[in-house]
Image (cartoon, rainbow, N blue to C red; front, side, top):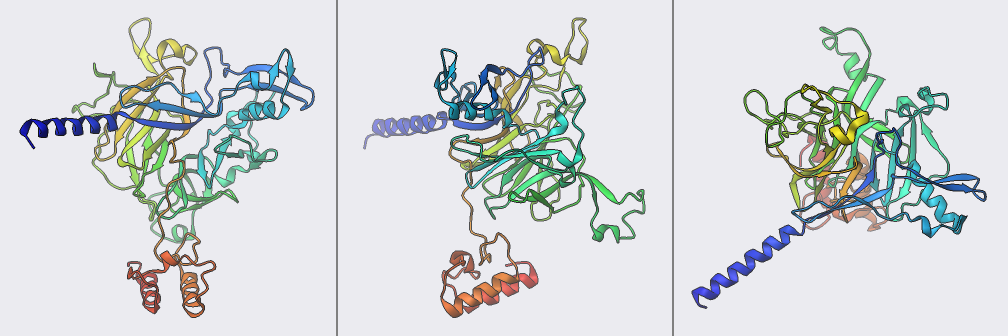
Length: 457
């Protein structure tokens, strides 16, 4: 092979690699309601459906997709699309089922979090953001959270009627995600007035420098049972930052984003810096899912400001070091008509950019972000994922013989029963290979018991 041929082949390989990188990513998301300058939400009234006894609206809420080709970001579009012509023509409803399907998207509100598991999208809406007909705000704690379930492929509403949960179930979160290491759903939940556990209350040193309040209030890492809508705290509500996202990468590492509001004036590159010249603004935090504790890190700020409102973030399974963040363009600051750097009116958001949004790529190793594109019309997702990756591939949990998502003494019993009977019903044989010998024997029972006693494999 001549030198020229080698150069040509290397050039073609490099071009192929560049083309692969330029293919970009298709994101999917659950649209979050936002309001226009006139305080409307952009809904279109279709008409009164006498069969359904219901007013039919086409609303912004729904499932969306957004393309990034590696260079350009194309604005989100509803997918599946809602077309009025599919169910309404010449002043008449032609398909009542389709009309109801379209109208149901009005309930796809997730101001308190959303997650996908087993093909089902669960959305949680805090009704404290809603107004009664008389203009007062909803404050009924016994019906605080509205939970709905959806088919993630079709957008069909699976919940029959409204399902409400009380405030004391603490379902409001900065976000939820499935951990590919154990298949559990984790979230950063806002704990409100829940009683502290006995392990803390009985510690004489805990209240030495505190008041004697026996409740905790703050964010906590929790798991959630999506059938019962019950959270299980790994920590008390220890954290008091204004967290706005939560995501888990393919390595099972959990990250959250703080709101990062700042009064700093953006530099020429659009980023904000502290007095030492380091990027400031929103900050990436990492949590240990086993202990629920915030890990120490030396990451700098992303360099971009952010509103204190729910946003979304996700990872691609192909690169666990890059988090994609759909966040607010700034924190509502700007120059007014008199040249002052000041909070700007929400009603003029199209002019002042207060709630404009952007798509960012965040390097979790350094904490810095780069803005991929600004998004017009206040597009914002309450939940975002990479197309085709709405559910991560769940790795086997070593020692979880009975496949219940946990490793405990019940797995020892299941393993012994399996070795005695050979019956594989209810047995995850892959997880039963505790000593990693590629075979399941009595040695695995010993390895499992040793693990339960020591906490280490």
